[in-house]
Image (tube, rainbow, N blue to C red; front, side, top):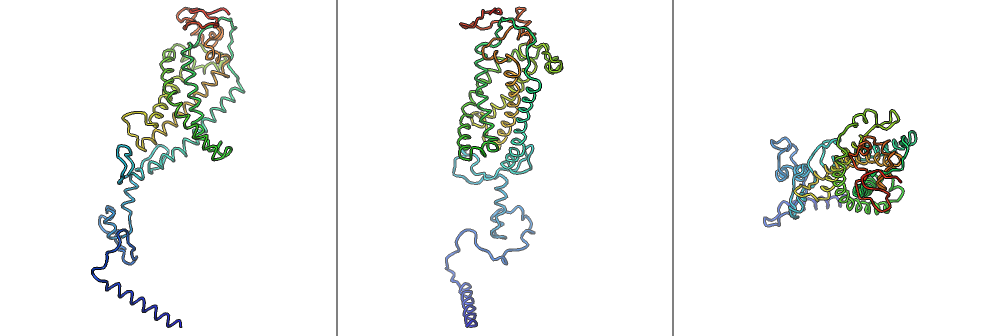
Amino acid sequence: MKKVFSVFAALALCWGSALAQTAPADAPAAMPGIQGQNIFDVKPDASEAPGYAEQTNGERARVQPGNNAPMWRKVNSGVAGFSSLPKSEAPEAGVLIQPFVQYPGSRVTNAGEAWRQVRNNWIIPYGGSLLLIVLVAILVFHWRIGPMVAHEEYTGRKIERFTPFERAAHWANAVAFVILAISGIVMAFGKFFLEPVLGQTLFGWLAYALKNAHNFAGPLFAVSLLVVIITFMRDNLPAKGDLEWFLKGGGMIEGKEVKSGRFNGGEKVTYWGGVFVLGLIAVFTGLFLNQLLPVFDYSRGNMQIALIVHAVSNVGMMCMFLGHIYMGTLGTKDAYEAMRTGYVDEGWAKAHHELWYDDIKAGRIPAQRSAPSAGSGATAGKPVQV
């Protein structure tokens, strides 16, 4: 029985082969698209033909059907294909894979992967570590050394250190910065320390809410930053005593405050480095990422570079502002009162900013620069006995 079945099977195969070879000339053409190919019909030495590497996809299909390497090579090199989306609204819609680049800290690879490598291998681990190092350093400093205390007797006479306008500008900028810093930290590092505690769903809602808070606080920070820069620029220019302040480490070496003007060397570094340079970089890149700046190419490559610069500038700014916040609150006794009420005691001014106090005492700077409010106990133009 098996022999009979084998004979019939062989006859059927031969008959089918004969029919295929004698198909009529008017038989329907094969269906379009990539057709199946017998491996024995593919030219084994096609890769040795001249110009093989430069072949188009159509030319390659004639010698090696099904080999679409030329097409994918173009896709991988960033060549734009056809897209029905308007070019003005989606200039990169036809680009499936970005061209190869090498960002600082990445391998030579396509731009999307290069950006991922920089973010995951450098910004996230080293940026997070730097923030933790600065925070721990501040805590250790406060634990071992403690706040700076004025070594002058308080007289009870008040000097206006910050006008209401200066305090309003500072607090608007400070509130916006805190919102941006917290939301940025959660979005960048939250999945490592919050998501395991809150769970994926709750963390997702929190990150979404903070992302919107980040976008709304950004314009407030940008406007208030410009006001702060203009308002405090004059008193942060290099002046007498700044070099000595740096050489003596701000008085930490001798345990005594170094003479300084209205703002000491450390405060000027925070102003020029943190506020002026890093702050403006963060604002510019933030506005760029939200596509709020005209006459710019908002391509993926430019966006990736802006994200890298935005992240690096913000980490640096947060590190500097952590020190500024500490010195303005716990790090210097009664310093917070100056920004809360606008006034400091005459003894505090002499102890911490002696050159500024000398200018006030000599009449070069008024002790009261704004109209005194009711109940402030201040009289314009001179220190006040309270």
